[in-house]
Image (cartoon, rainbow over all chains, first blue to last red; front, top):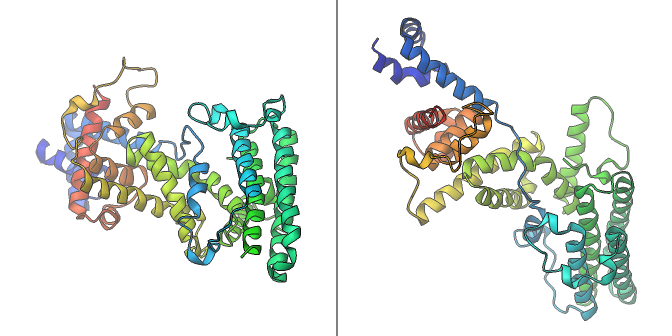
Length: 215
Length: 199
């Protein structure tokens, strides 16, 4: 076997893809040829490094907000809520509050550049405890929506109401869990983000059911 | 990975082993996500982002494109979640989906724009700054950087074969090229990588 022939077979050799006869021939050649032996070692070293690359790498920013924003547009029809008209001014205001709160909770370190919502955040959010302030603002937004929902209650089918109440209980329980976890790890960015998204989910559920009640 | 405290609620998960617990927890998250629970899906995202992004980053070659691809993967996963029957781990189900998204993007981009990196010209591998040898000439860091500058076809095959462990026949099925072409691309990738890493 010549060196050129050996190098043609080198990939299959290190991959264990040669038949027995070709493998034995390669073994003999590599044992007696310093250049091809060096070639083999370099290739095996490269493959060892490739196999040892980390299985996980995290991006420099959290991608969830971008994904979350696209879930409805790509949502299967069986899971998609009916598209309804008639956003109330109060609901739009609540949504604005939620956006501002999200920006305030995430903070500038989690986004590229200054958040466009930071300037819109209520003064309370710029206080020393943004999480507590955000919680109050979310609670206020949810209370407004709940009050609006109460007025529309009799216009909703009982099964829809039961389903919403179940969802809200589940979300409230999740909020309690996140708050408990945050009490022991208040700086955890994932938990802070989870708190925001859970609040947002609650507001979304309320907004959705209100829209349903107004059709 | 950030643990979602809501996941552990209820305490109905039987304690057998850490692996069984992980599977039970994941199955519960999938069940909830399939019912439209975004919080559960967010936790699945957080549990799997590292693997998905690593594969996207190596296939794409740039962080910006990798972020786009990773987002596409999870949006696609949400759309197709109804088809997940739980026969395998969620991460195993997500893996071929990630490969498909990365390869689809590469195919569509190849149709849209001329390849500017499809070259064996080694000047493209010039280091942007002074070489750092503290990690050794073939450190993972250097290999990641060298990978990013490979021609896209060779990079994809190297990542799938030498990093992910797919066989040429499987790569051929996924990429739509012949197994021989896959082998040729792998040979090219290995040759280019060794040249740049030993310079």
